[in-house]
Image (cartoon, rainbow, N blue to C red; front, side, top):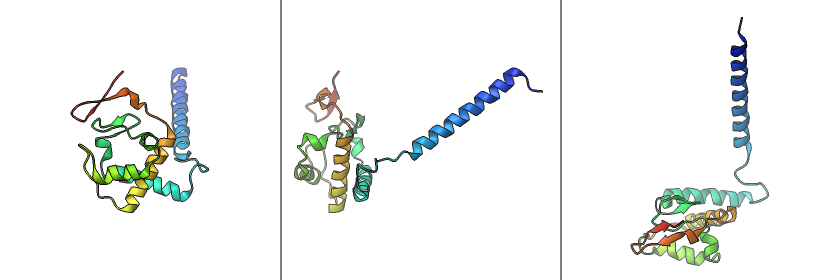
Length: 143
């Protein structure tokens, strides 16, 4: 016959397992994008844009929400910082600047990347005023 502490331990374990399963179900059932926010075509472009960002390893030099490299600026709000000027962003990506190399992307990759940056810009912000450019072309975070 089980003692009282063993029964409490089992109940607690079952409770934790149920919490874990409920939380896991909730996390994976919540859509990545709200259905009314983007059309399916826009969702596909944004998803492809994230893959383009990963393909060209942009995160090694740039940050998103403060996570990533420190060589280039944070890309979280780059779309609005450039007044939504896609031509300017395309020119920077195609020709490169300072330490950023020129990337020869296809038109579909460029469109997808810009859709990702536009969607990223709408999701939140990163305070770029806390970043101080250095003379060697890197950025440091000021407090």
